[in-house]
Length: 491
Image (cartoon, rainbow, N blue to C red; front, side, top):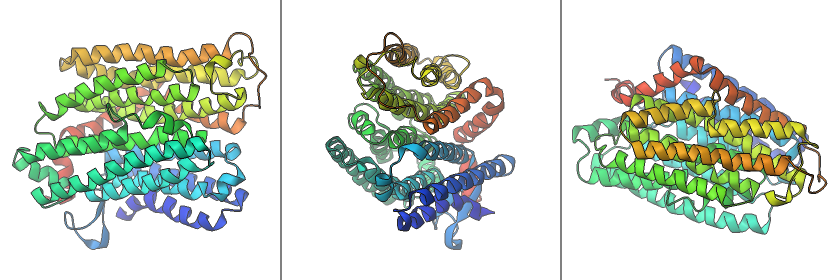
């Protein structure tokens, strides 16, 4: 049974390698991709069912027991993330049906796509920090390839910035892990949690915690390490933008959730108070960026930042309720951010421009696209009863309970500004007189992919009483790290 943990990594990795040999057979690669994402989604659903109804699963590779060998751990948080990743992967393949060209297939779109899914899944399942670094590199290599498929000057320019910043953070990551190993003698997360607790995170360990935060903040695009994100996320194809917006920054958030609840949770007055300040400024900078531009794709890209700020607020607050809010918001944001990138891509293709000032009246030519965008905007802003509201409610209530009034107040203000920034697209692009004949019809597969994710977002909101117990159970296991330590080290 423990080998089941490896499948969400192995299946996309194997199929990605296989598809390298079929890069000139568009239809065949597409069919294999459909089968693969359905198979991986089925495995993820069964893995989630097993973990929530039994115990976490651990795979000790080569028969080496933790902490001496390489381990993969599927606990409640991991399986929630794996399931979310595979829902996003399914929607991306549906969207790719009519948007990925033969030229993109020839340039290995599908092998890179599956390599990205394997890297993200590995990051969510690994049980040690060094392999977290390895899986970070796997997903980054795939993203380097995906960002330049298309070959425009803009893509090359933005990819240089993206690659340089991520190289810097990777070097810092591996150096910090080496420091941590020299101090504690292990990179296994469970044993790190045990050893850091024994010395109450004294001295250099808090410094290492801050260095790791810099790494994860760069991946997650937190203030002031966000400047690489907005433009680099809008230059690739919409399907790639959606994958980046839904998955890459969330790996940074997941890493923070894991590391700062399991290992570095003994100096809350230093680390977690600092997180709250960074979260607050990130929320503000993100919405200011979204309001400052008329580029439709850029508005959506800037709106990633306040979402990350909200999630970090929950980690900084560090209560069972706020951590549940972070997990709920994380799942919601993966779905709705991918949907919005899909819809923005469809709108830009339909209008022939990404400049909001040159759009107008498209509710007459594509009413379904318009109303889907409107619902997605409400979900993103957290209007009740949609999923964004549930996560924000938990996060803000947790912040008020812990007397972080300023952060909670700015969170409420940024929610209003997020709503204004996306409704501005709806009013500008879909109402009034048509400002130019549509360049092409809205692609049905794109609407289907967006509709799937919007439906999931609505279900997460109106069916919160079904999903919340699972989310709270995952959060409870984070607030008591001894559960994870005892299970992995079998003490």
